[in-house]
Length: 547
Length: 85
Image (tube, rainbow over all chains, first blue to last red; front, side, top):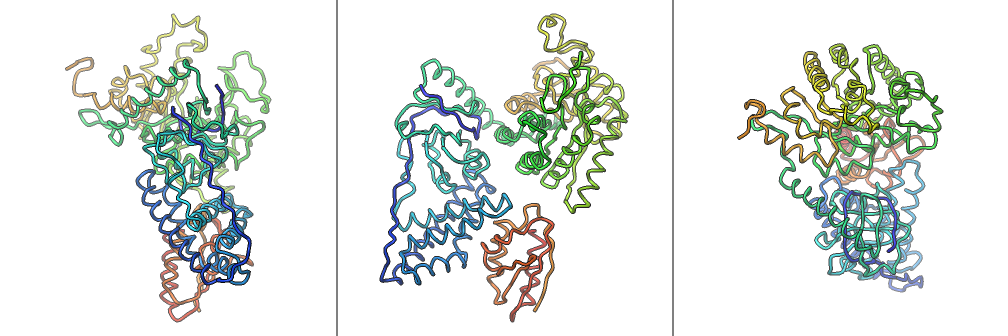
């Protein structure tokens, strides 16, 4: 068995035979031609055919992957009609007497280089579009049928790289997974694979042509592929795949349905995520938004303080790709059990009660303001909520708001656009519960972090297994704290959600609904199960009553 | 000759798809349409040249429209710019 690693585009498992795709080798002749008119005609014909193909791919992609992902193909068609590009190609045919293939390659490569050399990352990526349409025109000129790359059996397709056109052309009913040596998580190909729901591994340096025909498992959860896997591994991943399929069946049943009880009460069901790589999961599981985006990944995945731009790009990616859905990003929650070397945090005897989360941020204000500026800049791209963790006083919340205002002024002075956003706090301590009225007056929403709230209310360390006999996760004090917070929020027009583990505890869903909770934010894979439970609840009945 | 000054609001600047739509709309007119940003300029009826200008959010561009249908062309362009960028 060989284990190959890469970057995973989608959490999913594919099991099947590998088909290695090697692009047909073509040689472009550099010898000169006599009949330049014939070459001009060949180019025109090939270009028009390529435009038709791109338009057809657009139609296919709209159905397979949605309008937004499909747009790349309508852009391709427009690029193929660009006068400069056409003129440059024809010029090479006419004045240098080269054949159509050579002219296309030269002129299109020149244009791709122009984009590749631009500063703007978006424009840089457009060079890939030019290479894609270049390939499309060359394929027509060489008479290569791009449909034939896949074969006729279901397979995991392995290739050096795939252009967006190649990806969309693939027959989904025969495509189990994709593994490529090149490509990035944000390439069009990755985005298309994600929206088509196909497990894919990119940047897999181990790709080898000898894999052709071998049995393999693509494990998207662990970003790896097993070539000729052992029987045990096959068994365990097959059962994982079965679980995925059950989840898919649930999705078929519940996708697009509202989270509404039998008697007509609707709440929001959002997802908790740990980074932009989970965006696909949010969409796959039909979450209404993101209720808790843990921003720690930007700090934990980094060897030094992450820059404002790095953070901005990550936040923007999430906010923009999920718009108009709400994305609530929790500001830095470093400290206690989450440590990073470069921050040189002082070792504390009692870190859970120490300088963590907002306390750290309000101590190191420049550090905090970097994150706030990145968040404010991202607000222009969608529906952002900014949430502050470990707040225990209205003064802290107001200090955060003051810093947000300072950052806003700094950015506006530079001409940066800032969008609308909402402000919330996490309720994680008995202190916050007891002053929830004051906090609710100062913010738009409150989200109850039940893990910390339980730990601080019961004074029980949740990491300490010896305390398990004393830990009642449904302790009446915790439930009462949740109820008090919801009621306080509603008195002041703030909506209240739950984003801790209790939010996904299906035995408590009805209780929370009776308390009046507005939102439950859970692990993406728990969303549909939770929706199913909500849709079966009837709040007109006495609690505990069954049919 | 007509002249339009426009500041781009779209966070993505003048990016591919709306730029393509703009180019298509302009091709229906006889007028020559030239976009200026700093010391660079481009024929706005050409998609790749227009994209190559790298117009970003916050940039102010000057556009000159010249030809027998410049009045209607300028009006259409101004509307398209406000709608898309």
